Amino acid sequence: MRISVVMPARNRAKVIGRAIECANRQTVAPVEIIVVDDGSDDDGATVAAARAAEVAGIPVSIIELDARAGAPNARNIGVAAAKGDWIALLDSDDGWADTKLAEQIALIADDVVAIFTDTLFHDGKGGGTTKFGKDVDDLSALLYENTLGGCSAVMIRRSAFDAVGGFDIGLPSCQDWDMWLKLRGAGRIALCHRPLTHYYFDGDDRISRNPVSVAKGHRVLYDRILSDYAPADRTADIRRFQRFHLAQTLVYSTGIRRGALTPALRNLVAPHGRTTRRSTVHLIGTALGLIRP
Image (cartoon, rainbow, N blue to C red):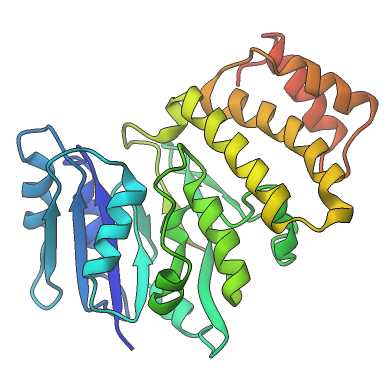
C-alpha cells in the first residue's frame, strides 16, 4: 500500500515547512509529498520553503500553477499526479501527529473509502480544543452539518476519489463537506477518535474570511443536500436547521452579524433538536453585539 500526501499552498512560506516536516516524521512514511502551488505571488518564497523542507527518502514534487484557482482545484491536480493508492490530504498550514497515517492504516478494510481522525485546534497559547461532531458516528449527521472536519484529517482511497469526481471546484465554499457527502455514498467512512490532525490559526487567506463565498457555498450545498441526499421525511427538519446553521457559520466564521438575529430568535421559540438553548442565546447575544464572535 502506498500513500501520497497532497498539499495545496498559496503564499505559505512561513508555515509550509512545518506541514512537510509532519509528513516526513510519520512512523509509516508516505511514498511522496506533492505540493501544488496555487499561483503564489510571494516571489517564489513558498516554493523555495517547500524545497528546503525535503528530506532524503521522501521526494517532494512541486506543481506550480500559473494562476490562482483555489485549494480544491489544487487538490484535484495533486491527486491526478499522485502515485499512491491512498491519498492523505494536508493543508500547508496544518500538521499531523507522528502516528497519524499509521493509525489510519490500521482502520483500512475492503469497504472503507475514507478514514478521518479527530482534530486538535491550537489556540496559539500552548493549549487547544478537540472536536468531532457529537454524533459523528451517525454519518447521517452530515446532512445537517460538516461533522467530520477539514481536509487535513482525511485519508481517501484513490479509486473512490476518482469515482466521485474529486472536489467540486464550482462551489464557492463547503467543498470539503460536499466531498464527504459523496464519499459517504461510495462506501464506508472509518473514524479514528484521536486528535492526530493539528489545526493552526497562523495561516493566511482562509475561505472563512470571505462572507460572500461562505454564504453562497452553503446555500448551494444546502439545496444539493435537500435534492440529492436527504430522505423526503427529513427535508423539512433539515431545512429548518439550515437557517440557524448558516447564521451561526456567518457570525462565528466571518464576523458578519447581519441577518443572524431572526433565525436565532425563531430557534429560541421553537428550538431545533440539534441545537441547545445555550448556543441559541449565545448567537442572539453575538448578533446584538453584546458578545464578541
